[in-house]
Image (cartoon, rainbow, N blue to C red; front, side, top):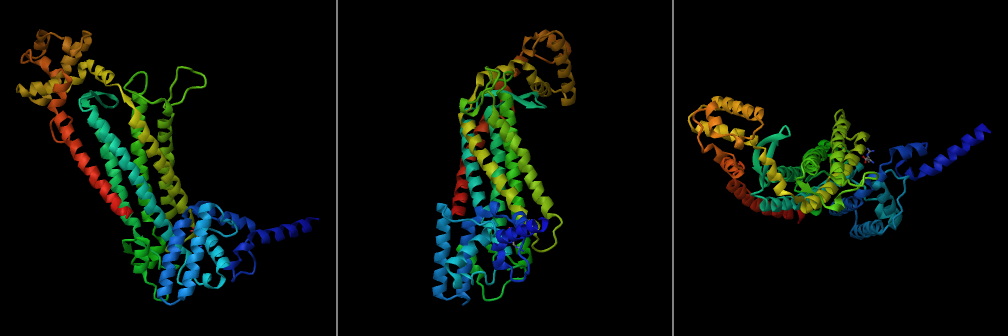
Length: 486
Ligand code: ARG
């Protein structure tokens, strides 16, 4: 009884895994079903199908040029590959888990459509360089998508900034009132972050923009494979100079994952800020209903769930960067199967970050800033303490001394339950004789921001002129992205 069951199980195993036969000439036994399942990457690398076919076609042309396939064979293979591409697109293609990955699924189908010529396609090629080139094509494509989404977000930020130059409200350090700033200045800070993110993506595009096809398994390939031709067909700027590095380099994926983590961290900070601003206590913004949810029990609630989710997903994106690093850190040259685990963290992070940017852009576009409420927080006029210190400096008192004097003024006011503007000039004078009536001109939002006229400061004309620079910059960025798209 026991042995009959065992035998049946073995037969079943053989059937389920027998698909791998076409690369198993060396083996006596077939791969077990459980091994086939465990080692398969098809569920993940399915998404690389179009890139795999593009890579195969470029390789095919190089094989033709090298005389490995005839013109007739080339045409037959190309036609079959395009048919496979079409079938995948329409959903007619039957993915077969018995073939480990997308590369073998496509090749197997090719050899069914064109048995003799199709079997020649893998000449002078390895799955190692195939995996690399597919992944590079994927990363390049995703970089363009994410960079495009970032441009759209930055356009919105410019727009918001332009419309809120004279909306003055408290700037914070330690989440405590620090100094008055323009809302445009605050929003522009995020524009700066996303601009650096954009530039990082463009740099990491260059890292991915290297053709590794033609590296073979690790040592390079025989036959006169024209790698320049392949690079041209696939749109790569450079070709790799070392086949061993070629098949085992994942720096581009790490750089991309780092860029994605950074974007997510920036988005998460922005979300956190909006969540705070949306609270009853702050009341600085109102979120559009469609981006909030109610509570199942508390009818009055309008929760900023989308923002919280972006913040929440950030941990996962950063973890993906780490898992990629950890996967790579101890690998000897060249390809090791560990590297099959490289796609998941990148794909997952790309999807999360891309979707987060899209929805965040919608949110920020429709957010209503309650400028009046923001400004009213300046009635707590201790926020002008630094400006009074500067006022005293202008009267000839060294800053350290004036800082101490203002400290005493603040203490005095708090003890007497008064704001700075409610103190009488005589009371000021008791603490510091040099203070005159013009002290009250300092306690004013416009005056305060007007003083911060250093380049990069929140003086309104500065803010305005930097936004003008942003408008030129983003047009340049848009053009450089369009150049990559060509
Ligand atoms: N499925 C594998 C991957 O994605 C293919 C690599 C094949 N190379 C190898 N030496 N087994 O990494």
